[in-house]
Amino acid sequence: MPDTLFVLKIGGHVLAQADVLADVLDQFARREGPKILIHGGGKRASQIGKALGIPAQMHEGRRITDADTLEVVTMVYAGLYNKRLVAELQARSCNALGMSGADANSIRAHKRTGTTIDYGYVGDIDAVDAEGIDRLLVAGFTPVFCAITHDKHGQLLNTNADTIAATLAAAFAKKYSVHLQFCFERPGVLRDAERDDSLIPTITWDDYQAYRQQGIIHSGMLPKLDNAFAALRAGVKNVEVSSHEDIGSFAGTTLHL
Amino acid sequence: MPDTLFVLKIGGHVLAQADVLADVLDQFARREGPKILIHGGGKRASQIGKALGIPAQMHEGRRITDADTLEVVTMVYAGLYNKRLVAELQARSCNALGMSGADANSIRAHKRTGTTIDYGYVGDIDAVDAEGIDRLLVAGFTPVFCAITHDKHGQLLNTNADTIAATLAAAFAKKYSVHLQFCFERPGVLRDAERDDSLIPTITWDDYQAYRQQGIIHSGMLPKLDNAFAALRAGVKNVEVSSHEDIGSFAGTTLHL
Image 1 (tube, helix red, strand yellow):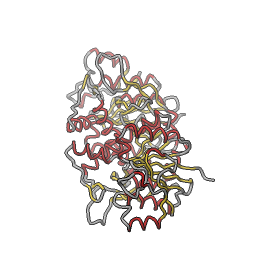
Image 2 (cartoon, rainbow over the protein chains, first blue to last red; image 1 turned 30 degrees about the horizontal axis):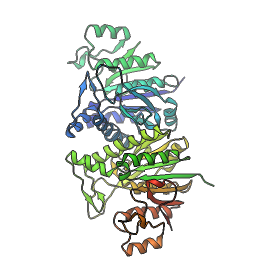
Image 3 (tube, rainbow over the protein chains, first blue to last red; image 1 turned 90 degrees about the horizontal axis):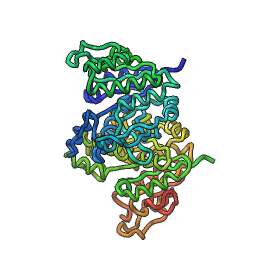
Image 4 (cartoon, one colour; image 1 turned 120 degrees about the horizontal axis):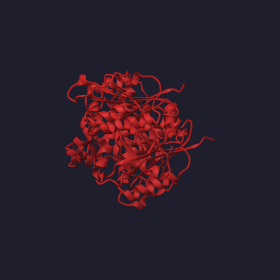
């Protein structure tokens, strides 16, 4: 039986609350076996960008990344948050190693083209070097990925953290039994976004299509679930969407094909 | 005979000029064998800090690092510059892996105390995990270190890049024949700071004492040379201070005990 690899993605709301973040990192550090953390940081990037006179421009929940914005997200994701998370994990005796997709050429992407809107320096992933990352896992390191990739020609690219998490998880599905968890500020996928007690405990692909048509699942949850189902189709064993209270405990929404 | 390890430190002036930086990275990437790059970035940190309303406070050439300043240097050193350097090296087929001292717990430090002036979150180095870093070298990665360390209790610390370079070089002196080079904007150590043709090609420890007393070597060059001689005393084979035109060619100032 293959080893379990735990892949956890934490969102900007988790990062922004010190007590919630500490709780998540406690649980993540305690968990044994190979594991990878992926983080966003968009909320803070918007704040710091604004302070620098570079206001955030969004289109359908995705950041339009001009050259100045790329500098801001590189500073906030790869610098501020990535190193803070690494230091916090090291304090918990988890041998964290912070990375972007440029580091060790781990995630290669290309600048998004062919869309009606120009997203700027936004990268769509071409390849994950699972072998190279696995050498780090086997050597006992815990990679902590920020939402920055590169094109192998010297250009950094801003890449959605949910997509990075799902693509990393998928790339390891052949070697490991992968458990992918998206941790955010709600208990899971909700029937009624206003009510935390309206959790949907399991969603199949057919359910997902129905929920979409009925308008029960919409907006920001769609790309997250699209990523999640893509990971399942690629052979990821378990995919879960949950709050920070349930790291690895399957108490949120579990997805099935 | 032990393998040669090349340890190159590049300063803020090199980072700030695109053509100079490209030249240095070309030379560094071409060089075969295990190697480590260390970079500063203080000039840009001061600019970005100023834009954020956090002006640089310096004391004897060292940055006073309050909590806000630590965020700025972490963003600029570990984010902006570190990832840009890694992406540029990857474009040159050098398998770079960007790191702070928190990553892989590679450089542990403590907050400086006992000085008349409070430097804030400035770290003095306690330990380098040469074994851990060597696992990365042996696996074919080229570590790229920024000037950030940690205390292993969750606190990031701002640490002088020259000191990091010298301490890393010293930590590898047992296993490797280490060549340490400080690359900056001048041809080497000069007799007359105004004249690039006044290069001093070699300096022994006794020369250094004499030059200091005569006021020929002074101010910013002193901590750099103190670091350089400390590395030699720790068993580093060659130490050189030079411009970007002479990566590994000993055309600058070479130091001897």
